[in-house]
Image (cartoon, rainbow, N blue to C red; front, side, top):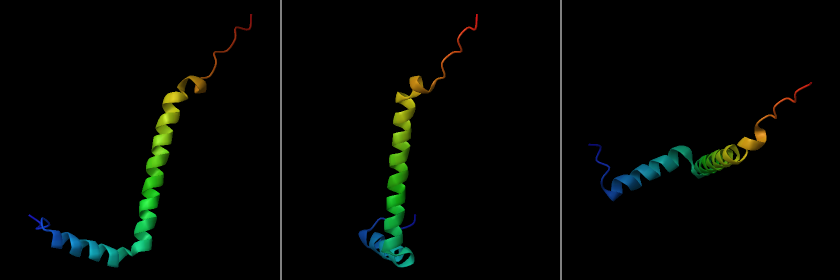
Length: 63
């Protein structure tokens, strides 16, 4: 067991992460992660709604 069950351990861990990475870097990482999730959701929506529009039309019979 790691011993991370108490509140004080989580506070110490949070302080260490802030000291290592800094608030600006963590803010940018959160923004990048949010943008990636939003892009993924937009991609899923466009795939499901745009399937019929993206299928190529069948070639016409040249007869």
